[in-house]
Length: 217
Image (cartoon, rainbow, N blue to C red; front, side, top):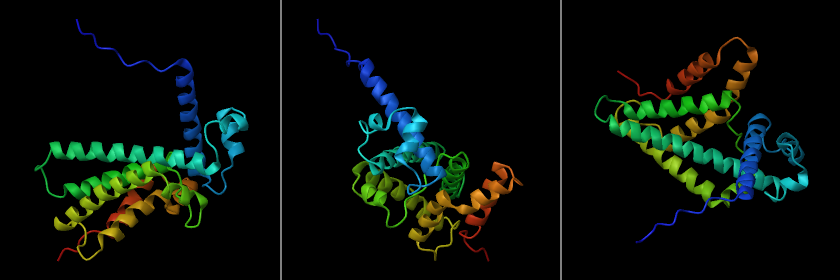
């Protein structure tokens, strides 16, 4: 009788190492969202995770590698969200016009929710050493291209459907949506303590998309 060998389970040590790395990247993600790459320190990450700095370096060789791992994780999370959104839309295809705009709005709302929850890492500055690490990271760049291609296709479709002004270059619309991940208006409104998170999201969504919609005659 032919038997099927089950995949070997990970050793306890391997599971512990993986759990620690997840805790490290989660901490880095929060610190990147709160302070940005330049202000974040390796000492802070180690202290927050509760391990020695030397132990942290057994997992990641540098501050750039730490941040890059967190950014890759964030990009993978974005990919998963967009793919699920795309699949749900495909199942309900033909029900209503403007589906592309709805997906763009859903993506922007999801981004703002993460930002308000302190889970959206701040993108590096133009000359940051992190940017060079990200450019050299195949998983990050592949993820960025996949996300950009999918969002770009929705932008073009929304323009065809008359929901985004056709004269706007799709790349300009894409960068406008990406900018919501680091929009300082969100922090200013939250600091004022005058509005709920939902109200803040609605206001930012309104100011963003009303500037992109096609002009109706």
